[in-house]
Structures are given as C-alpha cells and as structure tokens.
Length: 420
Ligand code: F6P
Image (tube, rainbow, N blue to C red; front, side):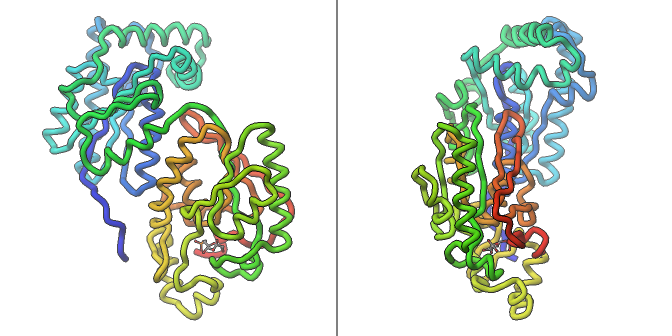
C-alpha cells in the first residue's frame, strides 16, 4: 500500500514561558494537530515528572531560585524528562514537545546541548502574555484545578501560585538571538515573531499558532439529512435529500436557532447537493467548501457495500484490512481526507463565533478526531450517525461533547458497525 510521503526528521519543540502563559495548552494543541496530520508526536511535561517523583503539594518557596535544594530537585526532573524525550526520538519518534518553563538561558543551553549531541534540532516556542485578564483566567481555569492545589482553599491557592510566578519572573530571560530558531507568541497570537524558522514542519505550525484565541464557542457537526442514496445504501454520489432528510433540515434549523439565540453562526457545507439542501431552511448564509466533500470512493461510487464485497472482493478485503490508509482505486483514503481538511482546520481555529459544519460521514469522522483528540487511525470507525448533532466546545485542555438526536429517526446510515 502506498503511504503519504512526508519529511520525518526528528525535531524538538521546547516551550518557554512563565507559569500560566498557556504553554501546556499550546503544546497540547500542537501535539494534537501534528499527530492528526500523521507525525508521531509526544509531549514531555516536566510538571508531571515533578508531581510523580517529588509529590504534588510543593509550596511556592520550593520554586524560589535561591532555594538550592528545590533548584537541584527541579533540574533533576527537567533532565529526567529530557532523557526520556531523547530516548523516544532515538527510537523512532518524530516530534517531541518539551513542556517546561525553560525560563533561563542557562537551562535552554543545556537543552540545546543535549539534543544536539543526538543530532536533534531544537525550535523554541515562547508564550509571552502581558494581559492580566488572560493570566487570571488561565490560573483559575487550569492551575487551580491542577493536582498541585487539590483540596486547597482557592484564594490561598491563588496567592501561592502568584508567588510561584514571581519567583520565575525574577530569573526570567526572554528568547533572543542565542537560541537561534524560535517562535514567539505574544498575547495568544496577537503578535507572532519568527526567527530562523526553516523546514517544512516548523513552518506548518505557524498558521495554527497565528490563529489561536481563547474565545469559547460551540462547534456543531452534523451529517446532511438522509439522502436518496442513503435510503438505498449506495456510497457517495450527489443525490438529493429524501423526504425524511428534508424534515431533518427543518428540525436542524430550529435546533440551531434555539441553541445559538442571537449569536451569529457560520454555516459551512460541502459542495454536494445533500449538504446544501440541509442548510436551505437556515436563515444564515452558508459557505460551501470543497474540502468538506465526502471521501471519494473512486470506482466504488454508487455501489453498496455488498456489491463491492461480491464484485471487487480485493477492494473490500484490502479496505477492511487497513481502512485508514486504504485508498479506493481512483479515489481517496481517510489519510488523504485528513490532508485536504488541513486548511479547513485552520479556518475553524480562527472562528470566534459558533460554527455549524454540515458534512458527510467520513469527513466528519476526520474532523471529530482532530477536535476531540482521538488517534487519527481510529477515525474510520467513529460513530457519526445521521440526524444527530454533535456539539463540541473546546476548552483549554479538552473538548466538551454533547450529542442531540433530532427527528425523524432513520434506519442504518452509520457504517461504524456495518462496514469494517
Ligand atoms: O454511506 C454514506 C457515506 O457517506 C458514503 O458516501 C461514504 O463512502 C461512506 O459513508 C464513508 O463511510 P465508510 O468509510 O465507513 O465506508
């Protein structure tokens, strides 16, 4: 089977920044994005090493740069995590994200030396944030919920965390020319500075980092209403909605009106008739994206799964053996679908108001896997039934999900169990 060509030289992305500057959230976003695009990526969070080896309840004094014992212990954790990172890259990993404050030049030099000794280039990613309200929200939403402050009175935790930040701030040195290759993100993407960013992979991160924001908004994913082809169990095509599909379109419009209230909703469809017809009862304008068109089943378009099994058993069996990578003759694989959805993900990341995506089974599986951080190869069997709205609300570290089944009910139409 032909796999997608990609540059897979190992690389280290090292985060830099004071506590509560969103480093972990940015690191997780990068990891999710690159893994989804097919680059084996792993996060090494030094805070987790500290908690696992030194315990969670460390008061702010522990982080004081003048506390020799604390400094040694923290350095030990940072180096243990770095050794694991190097070990992972040496055994075939591609992108390792080193999530730590790395707030002094001495520490960053150590990271560069160790990585370069193994031939791994380092790109630093610094998050600078001077907006007090962003820092405050970050502390309340992530830090106070962290195991470091479990069972601690929130106000006492807040005081302690602020003191911890102050310890780091006293010794903080921002990135500069000595670090050579870096990306600086100022106030969550308001300004992005690139210095000596070369190569395919670091450059690919830039649009993602430039479009980051913290405004929470729901993303609704739904397949089109039942189509004439769905009624007959036929793949692909460009058929119209069935009578039940038309009814779903009306119910969907009422549902979105009720959930969104007065908020502006971006409505996105594919260029295929069944999604455009599903958007028709909505009052909002909609944008038709070719990237959202259903997986191209090539020579199997217009056939049922049973016909493929009988008439093209080699196609049926090869797809069953590796549904993620299998490319239909003259058609696409799930892996191909992910690559063509990449620009749409960046558009999705940019939006600050709710988005309704009216798509198809395979493309929505691929989008859903990105949004909820499921391994991309698992996406071909994720359940995305007809006449169901999936409401996703991304938060700093996760994505909240609710599902709403709207009338009318339909039989079948979900290949997560019907087809291997
Ligand atoms: O059956 C509806 C459909 O959207 C087809 O057009 C498409 O080929 C199929 O689902 C994708 O699902 P699977 O990858 O499970 O075959």
